[in-house]
Length: 79
Image (cartoon, rainbow, N blue to C red; front, side, top):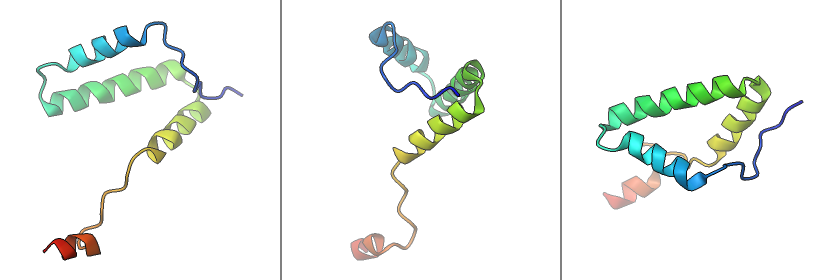
């Protein structure tokens, strides 16, 4: 069963980063979000394996800080 490749596997990471930032240059936030969504779907299609994709989603989801709930004690203290 394939596993998600987590070791660096870029042939030229700087060139990829430059191309990624260039495609977003002078785009609206909405256009950038659409580009990112299309890029995700294109790469997911290339990977193809549902288990690998789910592993990637799980890892990506762990890296995101949850948004504070409305009415949390921290927000109430600031008022």
